[in-house]
Structure formats: structure tokens, C-alpha cells
Image (tube, rainbow, N blue to C red; front, side, top):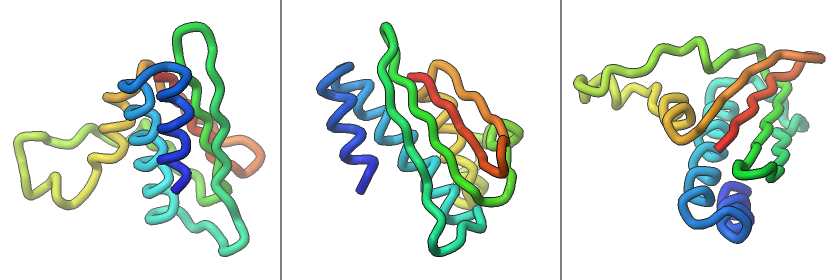
Length: 115
């Protein structure tokens, strides 16, 4: 899986913790795109990884329907039943990142994650 490869790359460059975070945010973002987006069979999720100063930048692009994950409210962590229904992926992305930005350009969702 691509997230394990990203984990390995980031671990080598930025260390164990950043590698774990990178793998987690990529997994969560891609699972949400596949599960909730309307990607066609031939459409791809594009992931760009770069290292700048003291942080790692991950850009994830997809051509599924427009969806801004930053508009989703954080889950109620005190209600176990609600947690089982979903919403944790976006929350984990936000919590594991320094900054998360979203844009919709040229019919693509663009999620930029700084860890």
C-alpha cells in the first residue's frame, strides 16, 4: 500500500514520529476518498510528498465530487456509538497535522497536509 511506502520515506528523512503521522494521514484521506467519493475506475488519487525546512508536506488530489473535509465537525469523543459510525478519519488528519488546507480547482479536490 502507498501509505506504508510514504511512512518509510518520511521516517528516513524526518524520523519515526513524522513517518507514522504521514502514513496515518495518507491512509485516512485515501480511505475517505475511496469510500465516499465517486471516483471512476480509471481515475487516480495523486499524492505528492515534499520536505521543507522542519516539516513534511503532503498534497493529495482526486477528481471525485467536491468535498471539503475541513467543513466536517469534530466527533464527540465521549459518545462511543457515534464514533463507530465514522468521522474519526478527518479528526485524526487534523490532530496529526500542523496545518491542513483544502481547495477545489480544475474539478479536483486538493488536500494539503503539513506535518
